[in-house]
Image (cartoon, rainbow, N blue to C red; front, side, top):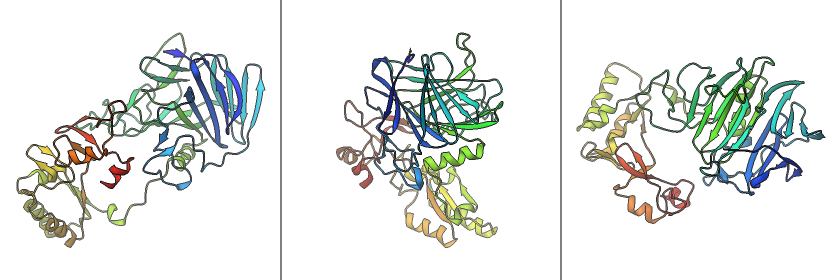
Length: 398
C-alpha cells in the first residue's frame, strides 16, 4: 500500500477546497451544511463509481440510473472561511472546524474548540496500484464507542471488532461472532468520550468494505481504526452531531427516509417455507387460511417463500409452479377474502437456464461485465445466474 503523504493546497475549485498529491491523486472537500462535510478522493480526475444510488438529499428519490456523484444540488452549502497557516489549512463553519495538515496529510475535526475526530498522524490515506484497494485510517482512543454498520452480531458497541460490509445470505449465522450478514451498510456512529460529541461517517460506495474498529494493532502508528474499500471510490461524509440522534437525523436527510408503510403492514404476518415448498402447496395454504379464521387470528399478510417459483430443484423468479399452484389467482383471492395481503419472495436474478434468460440477455438487461460486456454471472441458491440491471432502461421495461 502506498500512502498519500504530502499535499499542496489547490485553493477553492468548483465549490470545494482542493488538495493535490503525487500519482495524480486529488482530495476535494465540500462543505454541504454547517455540520456536514464531504471528503472525496479522485485519481486523474476520474471516478470508479461516477454515480451513486445512496445519496438523495432534500427528500428526493434516486433516479433509476443513479445520481451524478459530483451533483451538489439539494444541499444548503453555506459560506465557510478558509485560513492558511504554517503547513495546514483550516475550514470553519458556524458549527465546526476542519484542519487539514499538508505533511503528513491528515484531517482533524473540532467543535467549540474540542477535537472530536482526527485521522491518525501517520499514513492516514493509502492506496494500492495492484488491486485498487484504498484505506482511510483514523486515530482511536480506548474510550471510543462505535455503533452501526447495519445488521451485525455481538454487542451494540463494536469497538475491537473487524467487520465487513457485504450483502450475503447468512442463513444459520452465529449471533455473537458471524460476519458479514445481509446488508451492505457503510455507515457508523462514533462517540468521543472526552468531548461527549457523537459523529457519523458514511462511505458512499457499493464496493465491499472492511471496518477495523480496533482489532488491529501496529505499534508504529499508535491506536487507530480504518475503513478499507475494495476497488471503489473513497468518498465519505462526516456528520458532526453532537448527539447520536442528531447524527441519525442528518444521515437520513442525506440518504432519504423509509417510506411510511400501509397500516396493514403493522399487523400479524406469517410465513412458512414448508407450505410453499409442499407438493400440494395451494391446498396447504388454503387450509392454513381456514385454520387462522377458525382460531380467530387476525392475519394481515402472508409472505410466500420462493417455493412458488420452483421447477424441479431450482427456483425461477417471475414464474409460478403450476403443479403446486394450479390457480395462483384463486389462492391470492382466498387470502384477500380473509383481509390478508400476499407478499412474494422475489430476487431479481435469473438462473442461466431460466425460461426468460436468453430474451433478457439479448436485450442487454442484465448487469454486465465491464470488459466482456456479457452478463455478470454469480452463484445463487440453485446455481449460477445474472442480476437484472435496474439502472438500464431495458431492465426497467422488462
